[in-house]
Length: 348
Image (cartoon, rainbow, N blue to C red; front, side):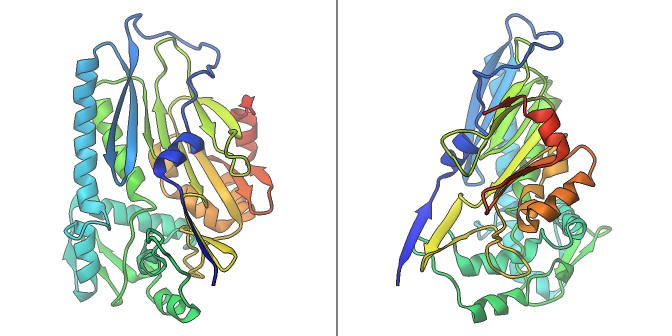
């Protein structure tokens, strides 16, 4: 019995998926910030990943206070929304949701409601109720193994977003079947990131970058007036980015089969599970999606990964302001028309 475990750290993911390439600058556009403005770097460890901020301003001390406020909000939300914390609000809901209505916080209700809406839009490609499946696969284990077909089929009985019932007026949630388990990993990170950004904007920071383990949002411009240069990882050649895109006021989110994976009896399995089969989605190696806001793309890259390039491309081209690039398992690169037209100005 052959088994090989492959673990890639979130730092590796940050560096190669969407690293900020400061040496690539686009043509100067518009007015510059004050001549004394600089880019200041801040980081913290939240949601099990390194969260990085680059904020534009004149006073580092004031920006530090702003970053600290944002980090605190993000940490508090992680405490509520993390499946990894026994005393979190989502863990309590998972233990008790099938017993009847559970009143939840505004934040948890919003995340679950957004997840259900995304499930409806993607025809179930995105489905938060894969929690039981993820627990079964246990990708974070030192020695993960492929579950048996019987175990997978049993877990699939509790995987269906329609088993979540919402009561907006009472801010309450219940499950329609015992054993349903919500995993917010595919959507909570973007939600928490957005709340952190809201704090930064409320404090008047007009330009910057937030990077949550490869999911990035940029706004405003650098002190010299240039845009932000973001590298898109090429899963076929991790040492060299597929492209560098120069953007502002954009969210760039990525999903790939290289973050959490293991090999079992000669076959690779990764954490992006198809909620209809219970097995790792296998049509793509990676997907990067670009939109105008964090809300636009939150949860979308993993949904497109599960759909596959053909269906995913068609889905995205029916949306306004969203573009994507797909790296397929057959070593093809498929882009939406807008991605190729608008973003490949510094292609490698």
